[in-house]
Length: 184
Image (cartoon, rainbow, N blue to C red; front, side, top):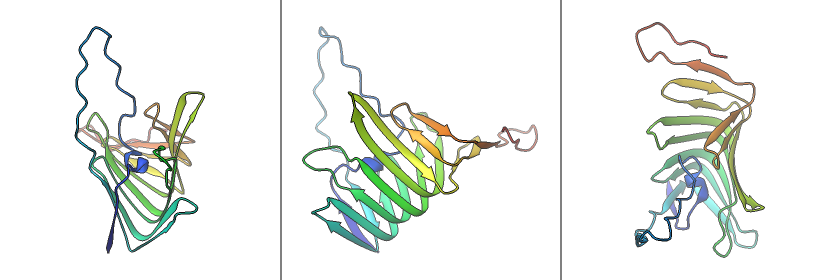
């Protein structure tokens, strides 16, 4: 498998990180701490092949695509990344075919999401940041306590909130009180 290192900040790598809220600024009278000089480790993208179209500002990764980041791991068979220009935020990623995303939220809960396709979109409209990931093609989210089926399944990163359409949720037996139960 050919290793391809994507050294710019890849927003999709943070697509399922638990928090996106900016820190609250300290009061004017409080001393301001120096910003950390630590840099975020690079996001690594491995695939069998990749094409970079510098005119269209796009990268296409094919076959055995694996995105590894400290906060998330994504696998799929094909991924299109619209490359940001001039310091802009990454705005669009499409992952397709056998998409698997694993992440842990800020509370330590593990999530395992599978779908045929995942689309990450980021944009700022009237000073409001909209950052979503839409899963389609029989998406399923598996957590410690439940499995949820929904078509589509949208994760609103700005609100740290999942939105389900006609969900089917099955709770998992976490104790000794009997088998799992269908909740919807």
